[in-house]
Image (cartoon, one colour):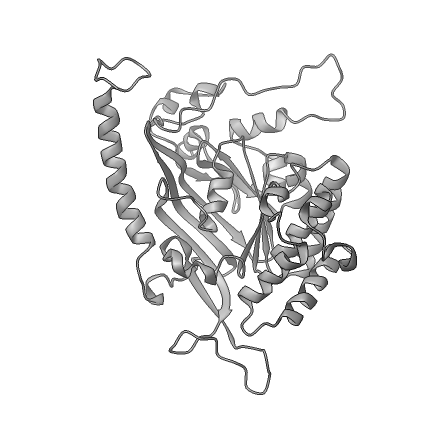
Length: 404
């Protein structure tokens, strides 16, 4: 590409080369950090609140592209308390799934990288000896001593992430057909979870555990264990994915839009199943969806994201009965209701999300907001606490705070 005078919306060849040079330097640095050898002490930490299972603190996850740096997650902070369901909502592209993929360390490098922030997770891991091997329980064959540790997942080398992924944190993906391997049976894929995460596991142990998990999600093992993914319906495949997530007895389950690809009846069944599982496991669920109805039914706490940032968070009652941010209010108004008739036009939030490469310094929602003031053209608003559990990032409440 020849170097030409830069016009609005276009990059010259010189600018593209400069971006590529800067990106390559940063990606190389981050890849080296991700693949380093590190002692456990480097990524051990403490929770700010001992009642939390997961604390995401000022997380930045960027994608380095030819056009510039896409700030997909740009300073996200929220907590997942023990034995709670936290729902994350927002438009497509707001950073919901990228945040969850960051927690699982599934961001595809070298272009995608966690550049800053902490992901503190309270794990219940095997106690290990000097050689790194699990310490067995004396007189109990096949059982191992356990201990609680807090890991900063963002600082863990990628070769240590097996301590967390699958065993401590499990993920239920949006489309089960693309998550299951088409050339292996359901039983083989379920058995693999136990074989990988349980020291000394035998094939018989793994099969017994797989059959137990299938029964837990309402599937008769004899009908499904030897079947291939393509032989099952969408709802059955999603149940298998949930069984696979539960097989290693995780403390945190991340459900990334688990009902999107399913019809309404099956959606209700899967949600009921997740509710039952919440009562049976000693852990928490991080539920990511764009469906406010699902959040209202399932969640204890709600996090609202917009353009890579958290703009409001609180209990489910606070978010639904007393929404503060204009974007949250707009989301609620755009939800179809039973009282909507044919003559009423469904509300939609005007405008578009800003370009994630060149984000403005002011509030990202400013151009779409009917309530914006002169302050909205200034610095990005900080989080304002409006109740012990309710927070909002909006200048309207900064003004209220300033005025007492």
